[in-house]
Image 1 (cartoon, rainbow, N blue to C red):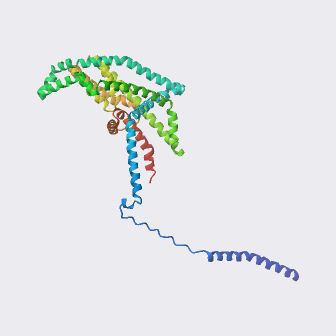
Image 2: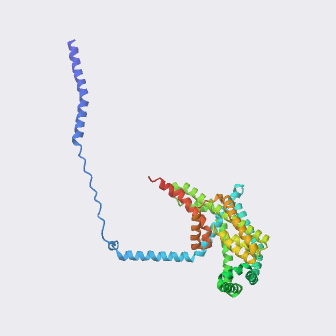
Image 3: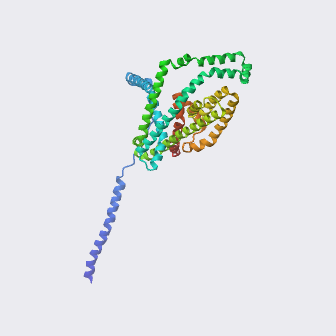
Length: 404
């Protein structure tokens, strides 16, 4: 028994020694870690540089190089401005064609939804447009030429009848003999062909302007054909310029802009057509002179947004009052009623696909566009304003809302 106990005791001591060994190693390791840990270094103090009190021009290291680059940049800007000025006619043609293509694109999409391929849909729409223009020119141009000639020839007789009316007597009593001399000067100036040619720059200049206008129409039609056919490819190419993460959003914004512009173009053409038909019917019913001529003028003038109907109301009412004061007063009242009907009934129904733009922005945009680009600027002012509003609502406002 004693021998067994003696043999067991060394084994127990060895087990205790082995159990104590890890504790000793852990304590030594912890002591090593605590004793060898380096103290934290203090963070360096950042001192902001003192702003220089010297002027920008005195801090330029190489003034000669800076002046040369500055002058080179100014010359480049002047050269770019001159280039754009010389290319203004081409840029206007491109803008007209793109505007027309966006207006025709909804008709092409309508035919595509009916199962027609895009190539045949584009060809059908373009042939329809050319056919309508050719029919309108064949029917209207001879009548317009005849009626313009008759209008110029009848100005003295119309003026004589106007001077014999009570309305002229009232104006003469109010303004005296100066009003009569003013009317005579205006009539003599209009009825003299030399003055008309002088305004146009001479017979050669008038002929050149007509030829330029015809060639411009042909160029716009050809560009419109190419733009309508390649509109999806153009949109895809432009979207590839955007970052990949933003292409889906940019594509959605582009679709909204093209749909709004196309709806606006179709709506304005429809409203101008209704204006022309109303003018034609009223002039025929009231027995006023030159109904086709005034209907054509109504269609062209009322394409201008917002101010077009008011402008034609002044033109049409003036011609009607001079020709027949009683019937002219009827036309003045009837067209005023039609403008209210168009503003509150026709426009909301026809412009349902176009982006609604506040009236103040329409006026400002039309004035700015007309000042910069004339008739083209007045026509594209509303869709450009609508496009800017879409970009602001879809891009700028969400970005500002995300900033807290």
